[in-house]
Image 1: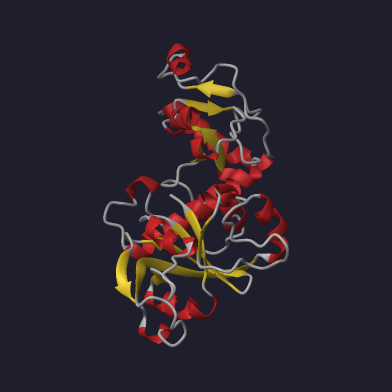
Image 2 (image 1 turned 180 degrees about the vertical axis):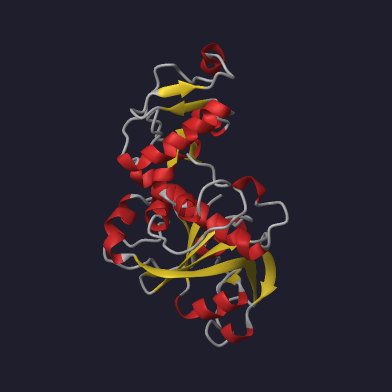
Length: 290
């Protein structure tokens, strides 16, 4: 899953109401800008942040692969120099409490790619263009500021099983925000191994989504950023952690089996907060009884 930022401005309300993005194939000179052709790279499940006047006003989830489509009728007078055929993507939007990017600008510039960045390095302003890919680090800065109710009673593993689209969108936005806040809390690294490769880290709930209360599902203290090997053992309750952060194992497995996964007997959490304690206590109970 990728995260994108779209510079919408005056087109925001129309695209929001119509649940779409649209960009031309080329301008009147026949040139295709990279921020237009990025539309071809969108994939179902990608997160898109709507940038309007230095604020993120909405978050959306891509629903299907982009397709060729005619220019929206109302845009013919706004953008007469654009081709009449372009790429259109169907999205499911959710308006959010606006996120002011101005205080975040230095961090966003620092955590963005140097080439093709959405963020102007000389002033607090977005670069001219349309659709920009965000680095995971920059996306986490913004998603970590998301507030609102993006929850569902449906368990994480069931989101593809007959879930209605509005609920699915809320779950995906909520999970992205939870991951961003969790990684920020732990310094963007695995809390056991110190691995900083974000693609290899999982945002593990301590008390599972299915049994957690509503407020607990999006609480970053109900989570641990774990490398994949530790995540699977923790998620299946083969391991847990005591009140000091020292690893514990379930009676259902031996250390020699865990060691084959790279899960070691001396592993400890790099730090703990008192707010982790009640969640870990409940996880230990589930590990003991599993």
